[in-house]
Image (cartoon, rainbow, N blue to C red; front, side, top):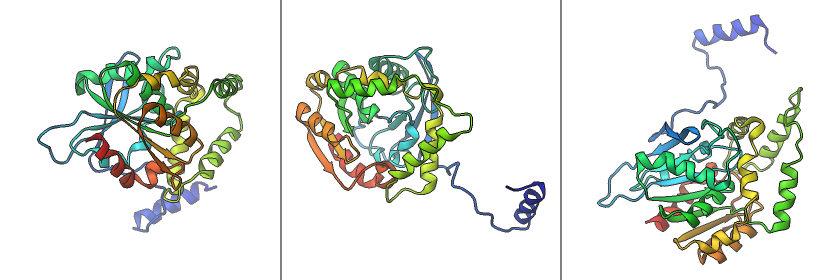
Length: 295
């Protein structure tokens, strides 16, 4: 650990023009990406926005991206500019995650999705394409089944489980254990879990960024996942009539993704070479699959 002398010495080196190794956190600005807050039913909703560099004759509806619990829209930062092809691409921090305000009580899955559309509609219209990942895919499915505003649907890693699996997951979430340890050892599990599934294209700084995002929701970090697991998503998939694309990295949800594609009568892209971290590791390749489908 550096004492006061050590800190002063580093300051002197910096003043003398010496390069001091630094972490990549916080990240430098990403070209073409900006952030904003919108007013919604649960308070302020934080979004990341990428806008097209060139206008087409016909502008496509905005694409909304919904993240995994308990992360945030920050996980899509490298992907967003690749999706802003004739359209606005918007990564949403689900209420209670990232920098979006937390509701006073836990919403239903529909409550999350409806609040997001209510916040976005005044600024971005009433027609959207959706992309959801993990818990975000469940929110996207619920919206597509109920709301006419949804034009097309992209699901990545669909959490489609049977009743027994959902009950088991809910039992784990409902254990009621104190999520924090006074000595900080709870952080080690998050680090080792995230680092253990690091993709080849991810850096250690990328893992640090993901682990930091997991802290933001605090003791409420399981809320959206619990709301998703309380709902049988299979009947909702059967109600969807919009065109859909399902992408299945091999991250433990490939069976659910395949079953969802069958119910949706959708094209399934099976990618055993992708696991976790695909939005950091292969954003251009992923966008090359998504953009032609969206039009």
